[in-house]
Length: 149
Length: 77
Image: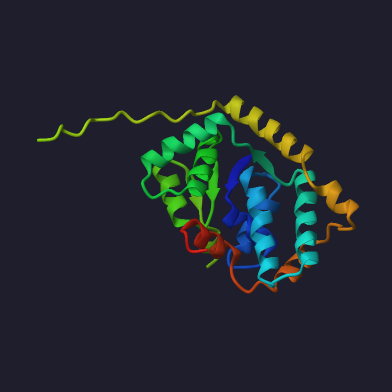
């Protein structure tokens, strides 16, 4: 089994066709892969698409249809999750002290992926600051936008 | 003259053992699945569709969602 940690910039490419979607889907659809999401990515996805309703880019019906499809994939074990607990919150602070340029979201994804270090995960993201910090911490990284390009 | 800068030892990251990670993954996944909104959404008439339909519906969003997230993370959203 190979473990992949997706931040939200990678997850959205599964539902919205854009540069890197094919690479993301190849990872998700591979039977030997386990795709792990941080718990906050769920709310992040809801919020991101809800704002697209607010801006009039999609309808509320489109939004709920995307969300019910995501929820069905969660129920079908398409993804595994890591929750944020007290130890994670401490780890985020440790990492923000260590990496000057990390924001809260990046610190959170870095902390959760580092909790998985013994499983040798690959962090999948398009966030340059996050990928740089992951590499500095010894994690393997992949930018789906740079695959097949 | 001010005091010289103190050397501060970095706090340590709490790493998890392989078994502890696997246990946390299982517990977290069960918890997220248990608290999902699938039943609620279905009850309100929304049904899951093939991904192609989701892609089609969301194709109205012209911008890259990844880039929108990055803008927000960098304070530009």
